[in-house]
Length: 79
Image: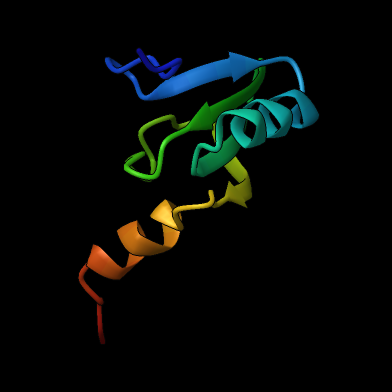
């Protein structure tokens, strides 16, 4: 069983460092968001703007390069 909360694909932390250590120790890919109350680690499928109070402060890829793979699936917007 994964440590991600599948209903939100997110896990809260008190600091960016704690979020980074958690993601790296679990070999998770995703983003670290700064929120009004702490930080949140989210998976690569996190929809931009889902948390209105969030600012992306870090992008973490894992040994399987899942973040890079997810980005390659996204449509390219133009003009």
